[in-house]
Length: 200
Image (cartoon, rainbow, N blue to C red; front, side, top):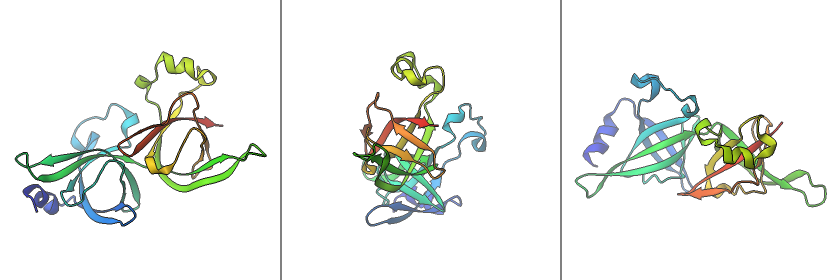
Protein backbone atom coordinates (compact mmCIF):
# COMPACT_ATOMS: atom_id res chain seq x y z
CA UNK A 1 0.00 0.00 0.00
CA UNK A 2 1.41 3.36 -1.02
CA UNK A 3 1.37 6.51 1.10
CA UNK A 4 -1.41 7.99 -1.04
CA UNK A 5 -3.34 4.72 -0.79
CA UNK A 6 -3.19 5.04 3.00
CA UNK A 7 -4.44 8.63 2.80
CA UNK A 8 -7.38 7.53 0.62
CA UNK A 9 -8.09 4.54 2.89
CA UNK A 10 -8.32 6.70 6.01
CA UNK A 11 -10.26 9.57 4.41
CA UNK A 12 -13.69 9.84 6.12
CA UNK A 13 -15.25 10.60 2.72
CA UNK A 14 -14.21 7.19 1.38
CA UNK A 15 -17.03 5.33 -0.42
CA UNK A 16 -17.25 1.64 -1.33
CA UNK A 17 -17.66 1.15 -5.09
CA UNK A 18 -17.88 -1.72 -7.56
CA UNK A 19 -16.17 -1.61 -10.95
CA UNK A 20 -18.59 -3.48 -13.22
CA UNK A 21 -16.70 -6.01 -15.33
CA UNK A 22 -17.06 -9.68 -16.27
CA UNK A 23 -15.52 -10.24 -12.85
CA UNK A 24 -16.50 -7.25 -10.70
CA UNK A 25 -13.84 -5.40 -8.73
CA UNK A 26 -14.74 -4.25 -5.21
CA UNK A 27 -12.77 -1.16 -4.21
CA UNK A 28 -13.35 2.36 -2.91
CA UNK A 29 -12.95 5.96 -3.95
CA UNK A 30 -12.75 9.44 -2.49
CA UNK A 31 -14.80 11.98 -4.43
CA UNK A 32 -13.20 15.39 -4.71
CA UNK A 33 -15.26 18.44 -3.80
CA UNK A 34 -16.46 20.38 -6.83
CA UNK A 35 -18.62 23.42 -7.47
CA UNK A 36 -20.33 25.07 -4.51
CA UNK A 37 -19.21 22.26 -2.16
CA UNK A 38 -15.60 23.31 -2.70
CA UNK A 39 -16.36 27.00 -2.26
CA UNK A 40 -16.39 27.64 -6.00
CA UNK A 41 -19.43 28.64 -7.95
CA UNK A 42 -20.10 26.24 -10.79
CA UNK A 43 -20.63 28.57 -13.73
CA UNK A 44 -21.48 25.98 -16.35
CA UNK A 45 -24.65 24.03 -15.49
CA UNK A 46 -23.87 21.61 -18.32
CA UNK A 47 -21.15 20.14 -16.10
CA UNK A 48 -23.40 19.15 -13.19
CA UNK A 49 -22.86 15.51 -14.18
CA UNK A 50 -19.06 15.71 -13.88
CA UNK A 51 -17.25 14.54 -10.75
CA UNK A 52 -13.62 13.88 -9.85
CA UNK A 53 -12.42 11.01 -7.65
CA UNK A 54 -9.31 9.24 -6.44
CA UNK A 55 -8.99 5.45 -6.48
CA UNK A 56 -6.34 3.26 -4.78
CA UNK A 57 -3.45 1.86 -6.79
CA UNK A 58 -4.75 -1.73 -6.66
CA UNK A 59 -8.13 -0.82 -8.23
CA UNK A 60 -6.63 -0.85 -11.76
CA UNK A 61 -9.46 1.39 -12.96
CA UNK A 62 -9.31 2.33 -16.66
CA UNK A 63 -11.18 4.79 -18.85
CA UNK A 64 -14.49 3.29 -19.90
CA UNK A 65 -15.10 1.41 -16.65
CA UNK A 66 -18.63 1.55 -15.28
CA UNK A 67 -18.61 2.35 -11.56
CA UNK A 68 -21.45 1.56 -9.15
CA UNK A 69 -21.47 3.70 -6.00
CA UNK A 70 -24.52 3.05 -3.82
CA UNK A 71 -27.37 3.22 -6.32
CA UNK A 72 -25.59 5.55 -8.77
CA UNK A 73 -23.64 4.57 -11.87
CA UNK A 74 -20.69 6.53 -13.21
CA UNK A 75 -18.64 6.26 -16.38
CA UNK A 76 -14.89 6.64 -15.78
CA UNK A 77 -13.29 9.15 -18.14
CA UNK A 78 -9.72 10.37 -18.50
CA UNK A 79 -8.18 8.10 -15.87
CA UNK A 80 -4.72 9.29 -14.83
CA UNK A 81 -2.03 7.20 -13.16
CA UNK A 82 -0.45 9.16 -10.34
CA UNK A 83 3.07 7.91 -9.67
CA UNK A 84 5.25 8.19 -6.60
CA UNK A 85 8.76 9.43 -7.39
CA UNK A 86 8.01 8.64 -11.07
CA UNK A 87 8.05 4.94 -10.32
CA UNK A 88 5.21 2.87 -8.86
CA UNK A 89 1.57 3.89 -9.26
CA UNK A 90 0.51 5.61 -6.04
CA UNK A 91 -3.17 6.05 -6.97
CA UNK A 92 -5.52 6.85 -9.84
CA UNK A 93 -7.47 10.05 -10.48
CA UNK A 94 -10.54 9.85 -12.69
CA UNK A 95 -13.19 12.11 -14.09
CA UNK A 96 -16.57 10.46 -13.52
CA UNK A 97 -19.66 11.19 -15.60
CA UNK A 98 -22.86 10.38 -13.73
CA UNK A 99 -25.06 8.10 -15.83
CA UNK A 100 -28.52 9.67 -15.95
CA UNK A 101 -30.05 7.19 -18.39
CA UNK A 102 -30.57 3.46 -18.81
CA UNK A 103 -31.24 2.86 -22.48
CA UNK A 104 -32.18 0.10 -24.88
CA UNK A 105 -30.65 0.00 -28.36
CA UNK A 106 -33.11 -0.82 -31.15
CA UNK A 107 -32.67 -1.21 -34.91
CA UNK A 108 -35.18 -0.92 -37.71
CA UNK A 109 -37.03 -4.07 -38.70
CA UNK A 110 -36.14 -4.81 -42.34
CA UNK A 111 -39.79 -5.46 -43.26
CA UNK A 112 -41.83 -2.97 -41.23
CA UNK A 113 -39.11 -0.28 -41.05
CA UNK A 114 -40.05 0.27 -37.41
CA UNK A 115 -37.55 0.28 -34.50
CA UNK A 116 -38.58 -3.07 -33.03
CA UNK A 117 -35.38 -5.12 -33.24
CA UNK A 118 -33.77 -5.00 -29.77
CA UNK A 119 -29.97 -5.19 -29.83
CA UNK A 120 -29.04 -4.45 -26.22
CA UNK A 121 -30.85 -3.27 -23.10
CA UNK A 122 -29.73 -1.96 -19.71
CA UNK A 123 -27.01 0.34 -21.07
CA UNK A 124 -26.04 2.86 -18.37
CA UNK A 125 -24.94 6.10 -19.99
CA UNK A 126 -24.99 9.88 -19.84
CA UNK A 127 -27.27 11.77 -22.24
CA UNK A 128 -26.81 15.53 -22.19
CA UNK A 129 -27.31 18.44 -24.55
CA UNK A 130 -24.36 19.50 -26.65
CA UNK A 131 -22.74 22.42 -24.84
CA UNK A 132 -23.33 25.84 -26.37
CA UNK A 133 -19.65 26.53 -27.04
CA UNK A 134 -19.35 23.22 -28.89
CA UNK A 135 -22.36 24.06 -31.05
CA UNK A 136 -20.84 25.92 -33.98
CA UNK A 137 -22.22 27.18 -37.27
CA UNK A 138 -20.86 24.21 -39.22
CA UNK A 139 -22.80 21.73 -37.06
CA UNK A 140 -25.93 23.88 -37.22
CA UNK A 141 -25.71 23.89 -41.01
CA UNK A 142 -25.02 20.17 -41.16
CA UNK A 143 -28.05 19.27 -39.02
CA UNK A 144 -30.51 21.40 -41.00
CA UNK A 145 -33.65 19.85 -39.55
CA UNK A 146 -32.62 21.07 -36.07
CA UNK A 147 -31.29 24.51 -36.95
CA UNK A 148 -33.24 27.18 -35.11
CA UNK A 149 -35.13 24.62 -33.01
CA UNK A 150 -32.81 22.95 -30.55
CA UNK A 151 -29.30 21.69 -30.18
CA UNK A 152 -28.82 17.96 -30.46
CA UNK A 153 -27.98 15.76 -27.50
CA UNK A 154 -24.90 13.64 -27.04
CA UNK A 155 -24.44 10.27 -25.40
CA UNK A 156 -21.41 8.98 -23.50
CA UNK A 157 -21.35 5.20 -23.01
CA UNK A 158 -18.98 2.26 -22.87
CA UNK A 159 -17.57 1.40 -26.29
CA UNK A 160 -18.78 -2.18 -25.76
CA UNK A 161 -22.40 -0.95 -25.74
CA UNK A 162 -22.50 -1.39 -29.51
CA UNK A 163 -24.28 1.90 -30.26
CA UNK A 164 -23.93 2.76 -33.95
CA UNK A 165 -25.41 5.03 -36.63
CA UNK A 166 -28.14 2.39 -37.01
CA UNK A 167 -29.21 2.81 -33.37
CA UNK A 168 -32.50 4.15 -32.08
CA UNK A 169 -32.18 4.56 -28.32
CA UNK A 170 -35.08 4.45 -25.87
CA UNK A 171 -34.48 5.63 -22.29
CA UNK A 172 -36.19 4.72 -19.02
CA UNK A 173 -38.80 7.44 -19.59
CA UNK A 174 -39.66 6.05 -23.06
CA UNK A 175 -38.00 9.01 -24.80
CA UNK A 176 -36.61 8.01 -28.17
CA UNK A 177 -33.32 9.27 -29.58
CA UNK A 178 -31.90 8.60 -33.03
CA UNK A 179 -28.16 8.55 -33.61
CA UNK A 180 -27.40 11.40 -35.99
CA UNK A 181 -26.33 10.07 -39.37
CA UNK A 182 -24.62 13.40 -40.12
CA UNK A 183 -21.88 12.79 -37.55
CA UNK A 184 -19.65 9.86 -36.70
CA UNK A 185 -19.75 7.59 -33.68
CA UNK A 186 -16.49 8.47 -31.94
CA UNK A 187 -14.67 5.88 -29.79
CA UNK A 188 -11.58 6.59 -27.71
CA UNK A 189 -10.16 4.87 -24.63
CA UNK A 190 -13.19 2.55 -24.32
CA UNK A 191 -15.60 5.52 -24.38
CA UNK A 192 -18.22 5.96 -27.09
CA UNK A 193 -19.57 9.42 -27.87
CA UNK A 194 -22.05 10.45 -30.54
CA UNK A 195 -24.74 12.99 -31.25
CA UNK A 196 -28.42 12.14 -30.84
CA UNK A 197 -31.58 13.72 -32.15
CA UNK A 198 -34.54 13.58 -29.82
CA UNK A 199 -37.58 12.23 -31.65
CA UNK A 200 -40.44 14.12 -30.04
